[in-house]
Image (cartoon, rainbow, N blue to C red):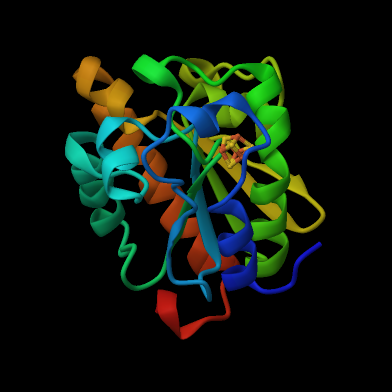
Length: 192
Ligand code: SF4
């Protein structure tokens, strides 16, 4: 376990533990306030993320920012955002189990350093990795699971919401529930 996020990021940026290292432009380590009490976790970088080295940019990222703002959150101020895999799977395919297995240690280490009180999985892949391998986002989004004092939930991936806008009201409700949970468990001025 590395106890410095800067050191972990530097190690991750030269990682070659899986074949995604050969096709990436940039490693997308994560972004946001490292003092956040909430972490959002997606599945992996897409094309824009790979080009810019940042998670959730492009149209899906802009949609995520709107939901964050509605819940009093922003990546500049009080959230941290990362992915299950730090390098883009070609053609935006799902990460393979062996790629996720190779990479998940970085996310575990990030989480251990940041120690969030609330974790939100964005989409099926993240929810299946973090909550339950059989997780169904359409049926179980917005439900809370507690693990070692951390509250974990999942909502729709913003890219899925762009494809299926009929789910947007349910996603909005999830962000309101997330806001309530933060107000309940947070002791930080970042969420007042
Ligand atoms: S996806 Fe993760 S494990 Fe694979 S090369 Fe990138 S940083 Fe390393």
